[in-house]
Image (cartoon, rainbow over all chains, first blue to last red; front, side, top):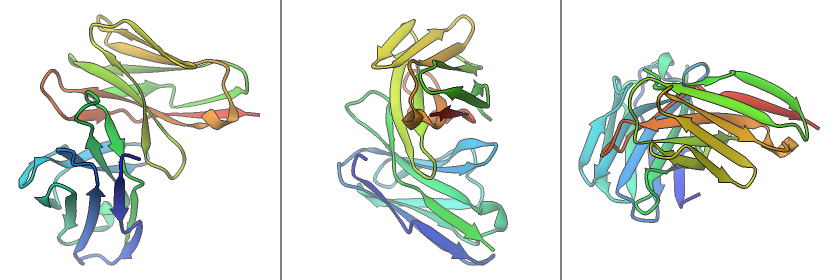
Length: 113
Length: 112
């Protein structure tokens, strides 16, 4: 599993509340990613990071922000959750020595009521 | 928007049969990858094929890439019930890109 953990694994929250999801890796990889997975859409990239304090937007970044203050942690924040953000969120890292292969965490199932 | 599109969306076969899934993409790529996702789990990398390769094997997996047709296929031979999963192709955005774009996946069911 490339030493990737996500927390929490499940969360139910209400519309309008802030939510932060955490991705933690133990192998010092430079690149980290946040995806969301929805039925009929596959995986879509939200944000990614290419180093401490270096982040960029993906395909579906509206309503999300990220931070990376340490190599090992990549945080995804929903400032004011909406029902359309109900999804399964996956964190991934890119292996430095494995070409462009990505390794995924176990996912966080988020429900916004 | 999705770069890769898998076909078929769903596939049901008997154990022991071969399963073939296809992926089409739109723009030039540096490499194409296939991933597997078991229900409720994260994606697991299966195989990577570079744009200058035409075929690659890994165990019971065979991947082909036709850059002129912008398509790839994943063949799983002698399928097992444990192969039941969703399979996704993923493409990069060209040399120097560190992003992947995933298709919507093929859901494979292998019936014992």
